[in-house]
Image (cartoon, rainbow, N blue to C red; front, side, top):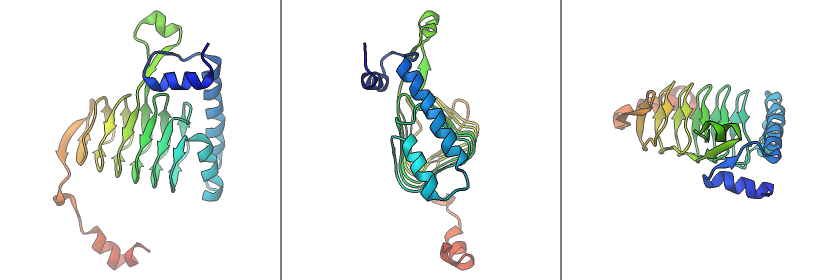
Length: 207
């Protein structure tokens, strides 16, 4: 019999695993309790909320914030960099691992699904699942209602349009959207506005 640590390694390996073991069922229950605690802390100081979030996530940088309600399957397979913001109702099902870079923004109801149930009905009924990592680069903006399938990567600086369903890798420096999500165009110098001038002249440099 596999112990819990061996089960976690198997899940991350991409091999078929039993999703119904007592250890994994308990890990999901703990994740629900911890996210309940974090969601209930909304409105409190970062000094209160951030330690609660660190109990959930495997790794996280500075200035990581989820609006309520945040849900994950296990939590310990999620790694988030610095300056991350997720709007309302974010879901991260993380058996295969989720890695998110710095300066990433999620719109409301963004969902990441790293695991799939087996295609064979009998295997599926017996708890068979397999999982693959989702990786999101730096400076990515994901619009509202986006769904990410397992095994995909999103490159740096990319924008994902609202309502997209991502089933394959999306490169860096593009605008992509649709179901399935596809590249629409590259992001260029023409996309820059006068915002930094506005920030300096009207908002005291953003201070």
